[in-house]
Length: 505
Image (cartoon, rainbow, N blue to C red; front, top):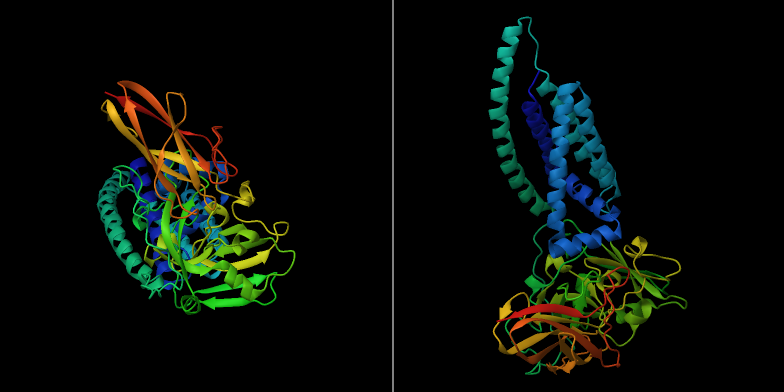
């Protein structure tokens, strides 16, 4: 009988080869998502909201990487189980491989780009793995026990060497083939010829960006802009075939191509976006210059029928967001955005078109890779996150954050305390800081660029030696003072004053 180590190794090799075969076939034929992607995205969909929130809290924008590592560890463990089970009872390990295949097949069937046609690579990989595992762990017998044992040892050594080589070779070949054919299936996003905006923003005031070391810049670079979404693999959308369908409670259905959108009167707008999962003092918030077509103009062309109060936006990957109709039809710059900070949208931020809505958390507004706008009612439709217990309406709460000093010691004397504050579509009127639970003291504010953007602030603190705490709060232009009550992110965003401890030497 094969040793436990040998059986476990064979289980890993066979299961890995089966998965790699299914992935390569899926990518080569373009029939749908590979099994790993399908399982990961199904897992994301089935994960309860509290667990997703915990993952974002722990891993932040690296949550997809953490999920990928977790799936790899689980697959490795199950592959070992398959090998050991096959060693114990013939075909039992093959049953584990078949079970894995069934899970992958069901996950593939549920994906927006999956379906029956997309399942066949999974079936092929599963069948190959289920047949190979018993074959490798059940070599031909012999009447001579000593000869059988010698053959077994030779087989073990050869299989170990060949298996190690096969795994390494397969990993290289599989990665190369998957990368090449993956590009064929999902080409690198071609650069768009963005038109000049029909309405541009004025130049930034001289005092809009304080340029303090450690302080978040007024404009968040694209590569540093936070990314939180439900896509395990970033969708690659062909701009030549992209369309936006506007339907539902409208007088006439409207369909737009990307050429239609780019030929329209696009506008520029500074807008700060914030994720509802942003903890007090967190960095899941950023500010960018967006280029796009106001959503209200598209809705006007479709003609919204009386009684509608919500627009359900849908992504190419199946994600949905429920946005109040009123915020898409008022005077704010709610956009079908095609540009971000002077360039095309990066793929991870929604290329070629996404929705940007000032004043709402992203889970109810900022649909990336958008493909549909369905005019409807809250009473009739629900969206991805509202189905998982989050509030149907997600107005951004007034917030402030201390960026410096943070997480380091400072010398006694004058210390610059600085950060950002935001109250989208309201604007920031004042920011205050207090030291060691003392009196609130006013901060100096950077120039306000727009009510839809964050605003920098700073405070000159005569810091004595010792350990001290700093807290910050903001006041909106409507007079609302940021609450100090600590509330978690569920179901509609966190509240509380950001507090940092500082060691002064």
